[in-house]
Length: 308
Picture 1 (tube, helix red, strand yellow):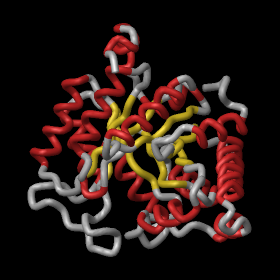
Picture 2 (picture 1 turned 90 degrees about the horizontal axis):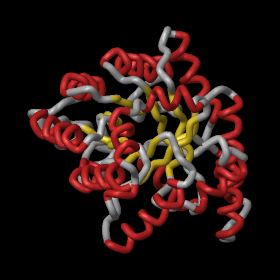
Picture 3 (picture 1 turned 60 degrees about the vertical axis):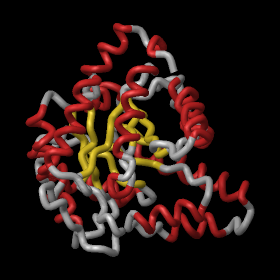
């Protein structure tokens, strides 16, 4: 991909764009999440999706960090490539998993060197899976708020964090989740992006509880258009988020009819997105699974293409 795709002025502007400022200005904002590809075929598919979604001029795009930090180097390379070869503003995920403070400082330093100023700071899941206890690197960090504070000390970064509308796997109640999110805000976080939202009421409860405690942190809900029920159910289980029966019952009506499941999944995503926007959510962050068609269809259903 040519570095000349975006003009020099556009690239300079993107170096300093603040995601929370864009989220506030767009109202609603729209953004997309990708993950680093594992092979050449997957990379081709990813860049086809990026080019199609780029035409929608999203506020930003994010690049995930693999489980256990396993795709760290690919996350760094992909985020840099998006910055240098597209008109998009990228945000890189960063987790504490398996990394010493020195290693985290090195990654953040590389981001700064290539002009990436937006980072999503996450503690990350236990390396052995959610059924295993969390264990920090002996020379690392134990909580996301500590990672936020580290990043803010290292430079002029915009830092986002995760929010858990259905409850963090290790939390006991809504109050604990709200308090944790506010600790991250006090450490320097400027916005939050949720885990996949399948129950809009849970998002609204968390948002309202955080606001009731005096926070003004923008909380952007993440939506994943369902095109494969088994895949999404598995992802929800891995994330410690059981999918609500209101969703599974609708999908189950279609049995093994793949086209019917896909159509129902897009209808659910459209309905959830519309309600979230109607209830005042600052935007929608689409989990694309490195494909563009489903997200484009939901955009068309919402009638927001011209807004983006």
